[in-house]
Amino acid sequence: MEIHNTTEDIVFTTIDEICASIESKGNPDKLCLCERCRTDVACFVLNRVPPYYIISNRGAARIEQETIKKQQSAADTATLVFEAFKRVSHNQRPNSNHSQPEAKTKDLPAFNIPTIVGRVFNGINFSPMANVSVELWRDGILVPMKDQGWQNPYSLVANTQGTFTFWPESIPADTADIRKPFEYSIRIESEGLETLNHFFQVPVVSESRSAGSFSMGRTFKLPDLYMFPPGGDDD
Image (cartoon, rainbow, N blue to C red; front, side, top):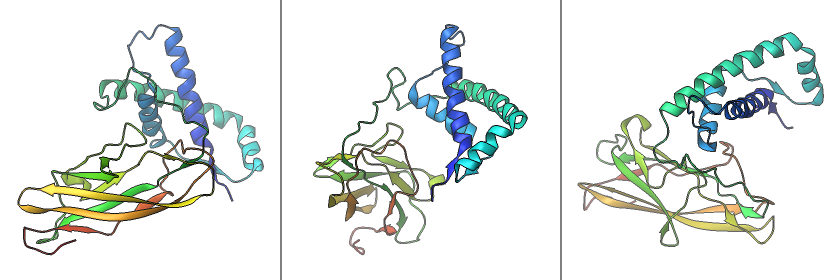
């Protein structure tokens, strides 16, 4: 059974319409309309409007019948989109290229590596690690990320509670439905503690195309990791 949030359709359509309108007027406010900022705008708006889920075409038809409610929702969404563009443009991600559109997903078979999620703790007091960098490696190189909004190395800060995440770039495949394990390693260094190297495999089945969007349903969770002083327990 496929569930669809029609609010996303409204938000994405509104963003496209507003961007087209802004560009047609010469963008007098000099707002950034790049793909990265459009994605940030979508997240801002979707976190502030209620979802509307349907599981059939009857649900879609019901939405079309609610004309007045739909018009009000569209107006509210447009207001939020304008506000979001202003906020995002004044707080752009420093690690993103805002002058170039992001590459479009190619319709070629690929191994879509799931999002890799883990946590790391101080092995002495069991507190979450902070102010350290977590690196994801494969075949002797840092793994490229699927999207420029994701970083490798990943910087742990206090409010992440020791949690790190990576969304590795898809790997080309000859065809769909090929099962293959991919070997990765996590490397973490912290002053006064032994370097942590954790090796693991991620089993993946190739698909007909590279995944174009992030999904929490596609996640590979690592066991909790612990760092110790030199001479302590090994991972």
